[in-house]
Image (tube, helix red, strand yellow):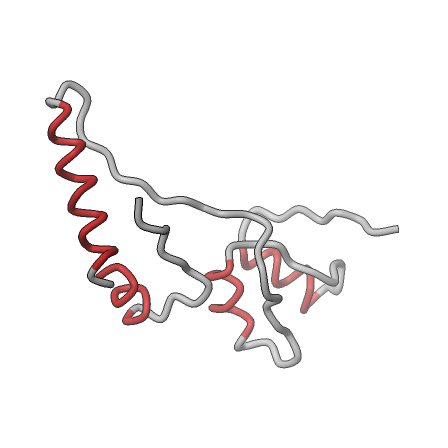
Length: 102
């Protein structure tokens, strides 16, 4: 029967699998898994995903509604011209995806 092993950090997760062998599988964000898996021969990151960790932007409370619309347009424009995708690629963030255009 599988046992859930909890950890406080990605370091503890990798220690549980590769050092103390308390676990066979790690569940974490794709970027964290890709970052660490290269230094552990034989490990691999599975296709697909079981969670999405969205990142958002906001404007300070009390600002006019047009401020949020303006920020939203900037984000959508950046996605449309592949600026966000280029930044992700330049930073070598594997497993990170750009949200679809609205």
